[in-house]
Image (cartoon, rainbow, N blue to C red; front, side, top):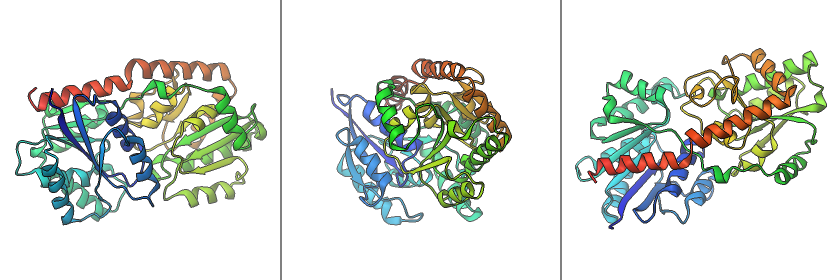
Length: 385
């Protein structure tokens, strides 16, 4: 059987959920059926791009494609050359810039099928008015040229239909997927990781794994730790907090923790290429976001058997069921977060049971095999095979 040539185009200046999801998909596709190309940033000075390309190395032909500039006409010609030289039949893009340049490069070639994944609507980007207007313009440009949109959550599909007037038939909801084999709890590794960060074995560790940006609500995580400390409901030596990731608010978050007298309670790890050892080391996963698409970090925590405390918002409440695999709290509420952390830290059996429920849920609903199968069926549909 002749292989189908598919090109993935992605903005990978950062290594977040969208990049990890694409990496999982690329690695999961049948290489006997597909010949895979990836156009992405390959800068050795950018940790995120190094992590992404290392993850997919050996599973795809990686071609340097830099989308860091908002306006770059040369990117259109570069992408056209990639398409023509490799006889690409399907282009799958993610991100406003990647979508725009893909449509421009393929606009006159109807033999190429276009797929666009929407992980977060541009209308919800946390940027200034001018940038948002530019991103919206890029995003709306020639949407009619796209054969299929993929929404990573039900709420995103509803927003695409409601805000853009795109037919629901043109949008497929495909949840992100996790390879359960990659997320097995290893007690010895967890113990070694705790030892590395000087965390006692009997200390309850609550961790947030995310980009350190406004929408993640991390100031409320720090505020909740202050509330817990002031109440004395958990002795200080028996609880610590961890924030893993990098982003524009790193300095501000560290300063806030210090101002509240919590510098000894919080561990800031910075960028972590492989979060699994740290995920295994925490007792609780926390994500107090204001806005999300469908966070893959929650699925990773669930796959590792960790209970989740997260905001009750669109996207999160499609994977976290309150009082089953975690606790849902109102966003921007440090007191509610403190209460939830205290509840699970004081009832380890309940926390462990929630973690087990989460792992089962990932296995049944959010497995990588389901995500790959859904993408494969979509690709076959749009090329009429």
